[in-house]
Length: 135
Image 1 (spheres, rainbow, N blue to C red):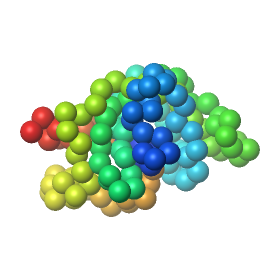
Image 2: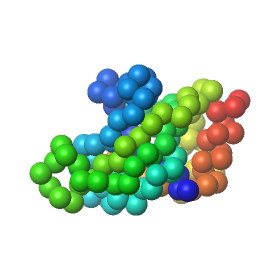
Image 3: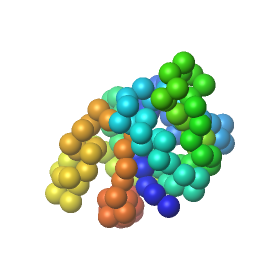
Image 4: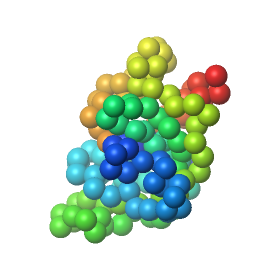
């Protein structure tokens, strides 16, 4: 199992929307690096859902429920999507400000390449976010 972070603008699609729908495809990714990450996802992988825009916080956890497949919202065959299902909300959102203030996150792409919409999360960073959300 791998760990990921996927960003979404909550006014367009939020974790609430995913919970309401119970399953949806993670489509619309048009950055080639982010698209490469989507093509690496496998069923059962866990994904931190990050609300971008004004909120800038990790709010919940989803699970990949399909193999990657061509994104039907794109005519470019290089872009893929996966189906995702909601798993749980974090006990409290973990803000980007909090992540940037924590030295253990300094090497994470979320800090270094903040515009990237889909990125891997190391097991260490995954556990640290989980621990922070408990406090």
